[in-house]
Length: 470
Image 1: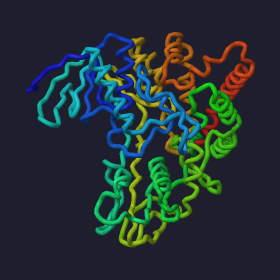
Image 2 (image 1 turned 30 degrees about the horizontal axis):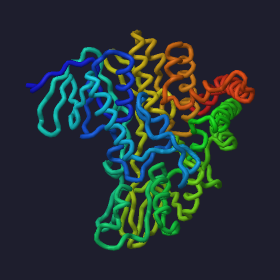
Image 3 (image 1 turned 60 degrees about the horizontal axis):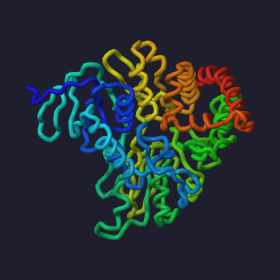
Image 4 (image 1 turned 180 degrees about the horizontal axis):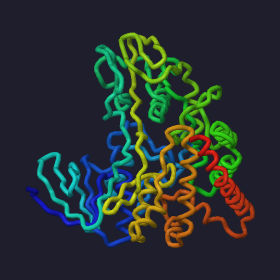
């Protein structure tokens, strides 16, 4: 029998970025009581398990929860992100979420936080420490904030065989190598082609490793978002809003997926590490130009598919093998932050399944879902405003994902109160840039007019692109 009973309006499963963004906005937009359940001892979700040198891909200014600023709004003056707005570290993000829960949500008197607890279904929450069961009686809805949870290097199980004698570590272990017994390794083989592997390669080089001592196993090359186009401040208006207009022009004119990405590269929206290779992946990873230059210094890049086995002296891959030195340290960056999950309706009776509504902004998407829940009762209307965007696992998926994102934004623009909320939301990112263009600002108005013109043309071409790709 349950040892305790809690009555609540919303039971939120997961205290990560999406669960907390949803809870924060619903707290402001309603008088509801929320109970948040999470397996971890501290809020912040996967950030609690992230490697020590991780940072956000995009500026801190539009990440976190809507009510509380993340960071100080400063520009970096040193390092590879110099001249661009700050990127919160993993430690900063964990501290931020801890403060959000302990100084805002719980003190409101309308939020109960149950850490170190497992949701078993039917309102049953079991403590992972004591085993005690709490029965949560939910008056309104259960909110699943775990559906699109990422896989993390430090907690995932490698999908390949590792023979005895092979030293394999997650990136989390790298900063502590010098304090362990024995000399640090001199050669490194980084496994994986995603942002974690890029971060790891950059960290190794920036920390003193010889680029020629690094082997990088890249199953697929990737297109990357240019971080310059994501800056949330007026001095970057041309790069951001003008850049959006350029991207719309690319979507409007493209005749194929390959043509689309070449056009996006030509206008500076995306970049690639090796200019001689056509990437086969786009997972929305965002980099500064300086990071790309560091990655180009790594010359020993292996493109033989995914790792199948690590053995003393060799790595076996899909399409061959590569010899490895005896003292090589393998770094496992193969965990996927974007597992394949089919989209499903966000609103399902007494259940809400949080998903992406606008790429690539999970926190904004969750907060907007909460606003819709608070202000609309009709489920058909709720789902029309919150159509989930399928993550682009292949290059061909990107046109369809962009089309859904743009349709969502059109529906939002037709709801006056929602439009007002978005304009004031710190998570929106670029709404304030647009709102800040005065009527007498001829240049700004011209850029906005071009964006609107090209967006309309893009919506005319995107269905053809998506159909051709599908």
